[in-house]
Amino acid sequence: MSETELILRRRRLLGRHVTTFYDEPFAPVRGEGVWLYDRTGRPYLDCYNNVPHVGHCHPRVAEAIAKQTATLNTHTRYVHDLILDYGERLTEHLGPGLDSMIMVCTGSEANDVAIRMAEAVTGRRGLIGTDNTYHGNTSAVSQLNAHKTPIGGFADHVRKVPAPDNIFPLGGSPDGQAKAFCAEVEKKISELQDTPHGFAALILCPYFANEGFPSLPRGFLDRTVKAVHRAGGLVIADEVQPGFGRLGSHFWGHERLGFSPDIVTLGKPMGNGYPVAGVVTSPEILETFQKQFRYFNTFGGNPVAAAAAMATFKVIEDEGLQENARMVGAYALERLREIADRQEAIADLRGAGLFLGLELIREDTPATDLSAMLVNEMRRRGVLLHSTGRYAHILKIRPPLVFSHENADLLAETLASAFDTVMSRQ
Ligand SMILES: Cc1ncc(COP(=O)(O)O)c(C=O)c1O
Image (cartoon, rainbow, N blue to C red):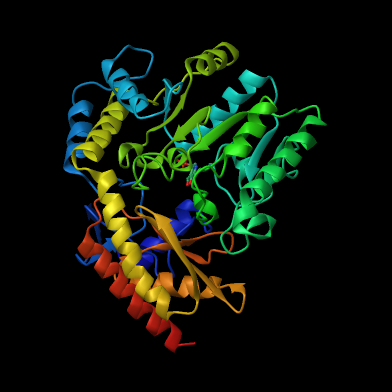
């Protein structure tokens, strides 16, 4: 069957509006390390995917899943040591107080549970999120998403604050941004306190990944976290994108900003593609949640899920992938800087570890079209990346952590020539 026939079949079965990347949709059939291969065997350098965190089809993760699948897999009401081994390993890497865990299957579920934990602890429902975020697809969590208005409008207990921004900083200057962000959160807390909902929690990605990951100084959220706690609320850090060593200097996004969340949610990279996610919090918060809600998850943390997560974790450590993200990320940033110095449309180049972005602006306007043209040109040239940000005008580079210096060279060289081609067509 041709790729065109595949796409038509996909649309018919999965819906016309099912999300597909690129003008010419990509249909990989095999993955290995940082490479994806199409049916002709053509390799594509994966500079985008964070799910295959330790590399596509890592043999140790694949073997752990296969072995456990062939030994035992059942629901989570039976006692099994793998989930405990994993929980201990994971929580050792989180700060004091973050000692208890629930395993679930998706990031959406993790955030859903985290919100319910905040409701159980505070007895209130008011929730604050940032204004161009994505925290998942459950009915509760999708209220936080930016793009489409839910039927009946956004729920009254959910309020949005503007996310920080590099080019248009809140409060008018980078120095004033932390204070301005806090002031926005305080305003929404007080609005919620004037409603029957009250205020329960602030949820955010500590790298503001979906908002284009502005460069923020350590301590940026200190004042905001204090304001949330003063109001009796909880802080939920959604580590689905920045977590597990991707940022290089730190294992977690919140660690890099230097604050301690009350609840941490985890997802995508956790099982290297196996659907496993988690919520980590204090024993007290977990107990309050369990008293308030009868919560059971058939698949979350079953022996195979725990084996996948454990193998992924061990590979991150054994292969020094956090350090690799730091070193190769810094090198990639240098190579991309050469392009940024030549191309006027690159208004900003930023990022940490292997999570980098180029913000494109022309005539003071976010260059959404240019970004789309580059993404498609790169795909044609065999390098996969994508865009993010409020106007999809930021090229997002977020490869598996086994990315090498040579891969960074190939990315930079391909992007430099893709830029020349696209600009020459203007
Ligand atoms: C920050 C963030 N949180 C949560 C989710 C939802 O995760 P999942 O798709 O596993 O439900 C996503 C997915 O893109 C995400 O980017």
